[in-house]
Image (cartoon, rainbow, N blue to C red; front, side):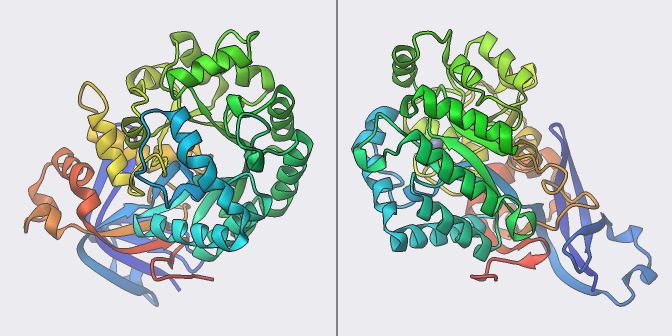
Length: 424
Ligand SMILES: [Zn+2]
């Protein structure tokens, strides 16, 4: 049966173009696919024959948010501080991730992680599991059960970490290959696998080039970290003396490929930015994490000007919040000049979808896409006014800077309500 969802529909059509349809109707078929979106007055009474209507009144209907970078096994260590990345990994994170060896721990974390994402209005994500193959399998099972869209990867490490987290390159790559065969396109296409070398420091040449080869052979995407912190870059220089810069480490290994998700990308030269654009990889801006670990400022203007695909990430657990509203707000604060609200909203929705390679399926309410959306109670945000009393940029600015405090009333993925616990 066709369902018409009624509310103030707000979505991004391009980095500088957000559309408000109010009151708008989103027409969704039985398969959870959007048939049409328009203002209510554009429909004729005959359009509604035999259909169901869900009226959200003056609530905002927004496309599901897209979190392009987070770590599932770090969800219970959010906010535990260290000054910089390398100390933080050594002092807190590696021990936390080692506990994922216990399947019960891994399942509990993954289950809570996906629930928290959904409750924050995030309907699609790219996530790191730990090095453990079983925990990664479990993460896929829990993502499937939660109904969320997720690209997940088993973290690859064969050096520069405690022994409990190291594997041989051969084992790590064979297990990743099995995960790709099992989970690519699973759960009606909601799940996918990323080859996930943690970063250059934790991977030998053999493991890194094996990761590049595996991605090329299977067509799987890659996710990793690039140029987050100056100490990290210095370590890379010593471990890969032949590489001309950090980006070259991934180029040489075949890891820098179209669709590759590169978290952080903070301390890049102009030349590296140009090469990222040419590679068709995506840079993931994680402003909350960048504040937390004092990593530096993501070059938002320079990457966009060069044509790099950019997305937003919470980077939980270095990020302190699952909310992409928080990431949009921090994404503005972290820059030295004001970021257009249209752009921030684009990055958290359609831009993120493009970075994940799902821009034709999700990211806005265009006909033919999946009905992945959230319903936001905007009454507190707008202090009793209606959306019509605000200029569109003002409305977006309020949403970006205060949206994390608004109540999310419902979340749908592929037309199915997913915010009331386990889905299938
Ligand atoms: Zn990260």
